[in-house]
Image (cartoon, rainbow, N blue to C red):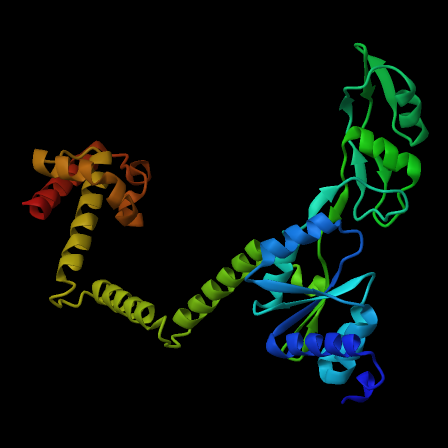
Length: 342
């Protein structure tokens, strides 16, 4: 018999042993605060968690004895006791457990003396109240109210209690009348033990969507780094080879390497450059045959970048002042185009 339970009554010893078995048989053990939860809601929570987690209510002293007897890092859970504690056993991971317990919470009206879990705000706008003592009640707690259209209206949005402050009796009464329920009531996870570590709510309350986006962004960055640095992995080898093939093809086209897999690309590039020259020539007043004109016009958007800078220069820069010289240049240009386009 363990030292801690040697002098305990039989029922207490059995309780401690049951707690120890629950901890030993489950990879995740949580400490929850049951304070202020109505019995009916506790039953609903147990029913909703059935098959996923088991809630074990017991005295704090007996839970602490069980943790001390087990020893090790699991005993650190006793540092997170708050209010009326209970244990929760599950095979889920701590993050999943935290999310499940958050889903058990419901909104309830505030009671005098409770601590505001967040700023409690009363929005402006009309109410259903008729003129009467309610106006004075509103004003006593700092809510500006007027009579308008035979009804009480709140003139402006007002924060009546800030996060962490105590809710007094007057404020609690006004909030109840307004139907504002600021209190989250449900199983509040104080800490969870998993594989030698204790996790607090701050560690478990993650934004899953934001986390997933960060992971996806990191994966994308790692993928790009692998491809750009040519570090082959199972996931990036295909992209690395594809990029190498593309770059090799571009080198072949630029260098005019007449290889069967790129000859069509070389011919296509030459054709685009030829049509670009034709468009530039037409812009300078040269006549093109119908077939060339049609092909050049159709391909204009694709070939505009292929116009050599010297050819695309404004015609005004090369105008001759002598009429005879101009005619000779036109004749020479027409002869050149005839040879180029057949």
